[in-house]
Amino acid sequence: MIEKYIFCKIKTIKNKAMKKTYFILTLSGVIFLNACNTKKQISEGSDSLTKNQKANAPSFPHLEGPYLGQKPPGLTPEPFAPGFVTTEDWQTFGVFTPDLKEFYFIREVGETDEEKKMEFVVIQNKNNKWEKSVVSPRVGEPFISPDGKTMHLGTVYKERTETGDWSEIKSLGVPFKDFPIMLLTVSAKGTYVFDAMGEGTLRYSRLIDGKREEPKKFSKDINSGKYNAHPFIAPDESYILWDGRKDGGFGKADIYVSFKQLDGTWGKAINLGDKINTGNSEFGAIVTPDGKYIIFNRDVGKIKPTDKYEDVDIFWVDAQIIENLKPKQ
Image: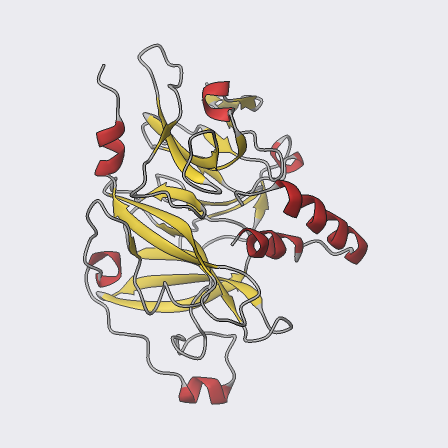
């Protein structure tokens, strides 16, 4: 998973010489760093298909009910929507809108290295039926603000228009555009939390009296260890989730939680435990807007003997795990 994730990041760098150098540097240092198989589970509305592919592709499964019609998980993680979101290919960073009627994620399509590309996909609930379509090529790791009005994609974002569509991409501007942000999430109060690729340091920026403050680093209780990345802040700012490598962890990258203390500081990093974290990498944890489930990414190893990279799947689990780890005041 690690090598593949970094490779996908490097694809966005235009200069080939820079691409090779950056890949080597990142591969040696970044640990925290599938999508639906287009020949198996392709939406008939996907613009990336040829007419012949559309004619031979099976229809998207008829799904009804919340969460793509999936049976909710318990305290043991399960693949999310197996067969049409989680497949034997590569997919990652799934996120729902606050009304739970749209699910966005990133997937890879293509059979050969030359054909492979990353796509940004949405599955929408229309008339109680879920329909899948390709939004665009991969732009960034998505997060929808608690009010549903903004889609954050790292250093850029989109705004929900009056028609219900999304605007063109806009830049967050300085100082955020100067950070190599992978994931930026935001609380209901407007606080940003974000990472910086290759740095391993998490930062926050509050909205105070309508003005955005300069980003500040979290304390060492959170920024200890290595490769801290992909922070998620709860809408009420009561806790944050992120992934990194720390002493006593289970694998390459584990998911941690920190709870806000009564004095406003952040508590020590708490590992989510061996039900969530394995000997490989778990990363990119986000809680669904209703607070019920954690959606995260897991490195599940190579699926096919010919795979160049390890596969990554989207998993989900009951968010009660977070409450169970909360220290008693």
